[in-house]
Amino acid sequence: MSLADFLNKLDELESEASAALQTVSDSEQLESLRVRYLGAKSGLFKDVQKLLGGIGGDDKPAAGKRLNEVKRSIQQALELAKDLVAGGSTAGSGPAPDPTLPGIPMRLGHLHPVTQTIEHLKEIMGRMGFSTAEGPEVEDPWHNFVALNIPEDHPARDPLDNFYLATAGAVAASEGSRLLRSQTSTVQIRVMESSKPPIRVISLGRVYRPDAPDATHFPMFHQMEGLLIDTEVTMANLKTVLRIFANNYLGGDVEIRFRPSFFPFTEPSVEVDFFWNGQWIEFGGAGMVDPAVLTGVGYDPEIYSGFAFGLGIERLCMRRHGITDIRDLFSGDLRFLKQF
Image (cartoon, rainbow, N blue to C red):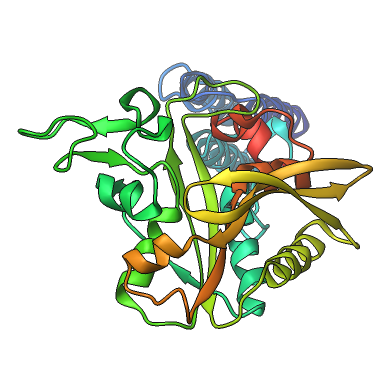
């Protein structure tokens, strides 16, 4: 065989092996190609190597040199294909992976819209000098009803309208019973029991009432309770605080109005409406703290007066963000929550 024919066969073998190894997709295919081209007994390289004996003596050094070059080339192609298969990629799927390129950024969570609203309310009221107070969610009837001037025969104390807890030896609504608080007004009693006037606090937290869930009701929701006790406090002070709050939270010059109402722990009592986006919207109740409540915690109503107000946090959140169903806030649906 002439040197030219031998070299042509080597070139063809190198080209064929290189093209085949660039399409490897798994280790089984890789092993099959290794046997085909470099197999010790029946490999194509072995077949070409046998032809070396037919080359003339003067041409053998050149033929042997090229034979070794082709073997190294096929071995290198095999190693590259092995690395790509091991890394879960293929030689034909594009460029090799670059570990210096930036990866996919992690998705970070954020605060629930109700929690965002609570933090915003704290910030607004804090600028008006109100500090934050907290109280237990499991309450006794005295703090939840008696201290708030709610008589024993009041409908608000009905066991069917509260979440009373089953405790040893206690009857629902009796002195030794416990219940999930139905209002954050319980915190104002605890604050007044342990503090002397002047007092300026807000409490924000969960409250519980056995309401059937619908677009505007839920058995668990959040309230913001505000309390200010000092000398010479009037309804004008209450209206001013609520108007400043509304302007800061809803934006713009929000008009506010009071409608006569009744709450056992305030006298006089009012419903609070805000005029926003062209309509009057009810946001909660308020009024001057009843003298009987002040007396019950040891304050002299002849010296001190004050106001209290309670606003629904979900209601504020829903109005600000255009949410129409309170159940969406507690559904856990990330498609909804990630909008906030």
